[in-house]
Image (cartoon, rainbow over all chains, first blue to last red; front, side, top):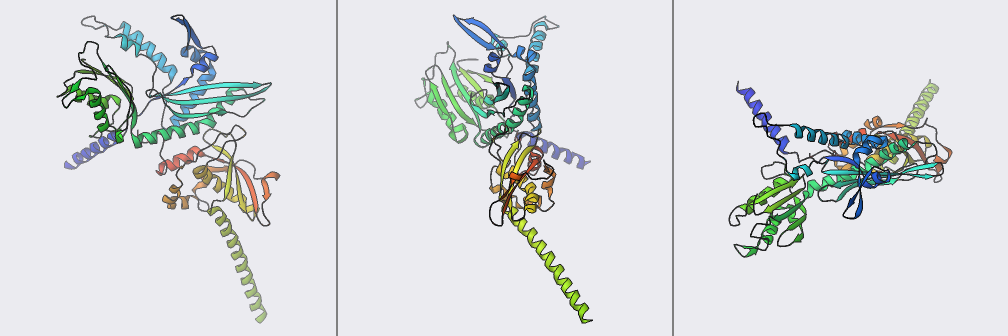
Length: 318
Length: 174
């Protein structure tokens, strides 16, 4: 009787260890670039304070261009084979619109109340991923000869850094159709792309996840980042000292610091906290939020997150 | 009676000599392969999960150069990679980026690249075995440089090395 219990306990400990040993996995999504969308006529034009602006119309690109579907499907397949299935942008767009329609219709059975949604919630309903794989290709034609210029960029959604790339021009062909040339381009570039992505992940495991931390203040709060506390240090320096202590190898950059806001970039956070749980920007910055709300600072604050890699603390209240 | 003894002795000496010579040649080929003296280049875009490469192997005997091409091709994909070039080829980084890994996992690689070893599972000849005239070069008085075009199943090879924890998979750690 005792033996099964012991085995169960050991299994539980083993599964917990496995779960704790895994860092938060970033989501990836292939997105046709603005340049490709605009060049191929999948864009919307509108007037913005006197200037004409063009934005990509992804929905129409997916509905009307089979080549973009072919390329994305091939990339998705190859990434899934490497244990990294990607989010499919077309499905994400459809899910967002169906969720939106459902939310508009949903009412509480008891009070008849609608779903609570702020303008920010509405704004956040967009197709997003931690790493965007931006895809561009152009067909070069010289007489009957055709070749494909192919460019794949892996962009970190939070730090805006290009973390992986594969680009080049394929062999010219007199007879091959564009889809065949595109398929060849994907085949020849994916290894280089995954290789540079692997280097990025290796760096992340060694030096921590790179995130962005922003500090802002509510307009009605009477303090600011130049307010002095305790030993006479300004709040801005107090926050810098906290980051110095809590980042991997003390790595972070203070990009901007005024009395109202601070922007910290290239903040390297550990992948796991002291108890071995995987953490992201929100979990990491929560500790800073607690630090600021406790004595001697006692600053009430609101923590706002954006994906795995960006978090903002707004000082002065929730 | 004495004559028959003489013939038997000559016969055994000849047989021993032939087998020793064959063994020496075999060892020599192995030696050429052991120091991994070869050049590898991309030959075009292969099917998904594979690489089509041309391997230039060096040997005094053209026949041995061809037989070592397959072993060299697999070694090249694992440890050397290749530069891009014509036929839509892009550069390929080796599966193992740290050269010291070969020494760290010596036991595995020795068995893997042994005569008739596991490496044969991941490579196949892309042509019927015939060598194009331009692919057979006599580089010195007694040495040939011979090219063979082969297909290496790079994705399967990568998965095999991932299984042995020699390289990390893209999703490892997540």
